[in-house]
Image (cartoon, rainbow, N blue to C red):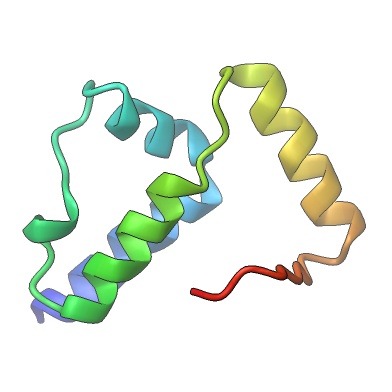
Length: 79
């Protein structure tokens, strides 16, 4: 259903952060309000807020750090 499709979209955005950057820059039209599930909308907004500025180099560094950490990211911020 719709929620499953949203989860697939979120997965693509998280696996390929250049797509999040395209959303942030307005090249892809998508917002948190476009999601049927309130939770998925929150996940989208949080991912978008954490999307690094700066383009390719910023993504490459972040992905390398995430991989080095075994994709176990701990944040001191509350969500």
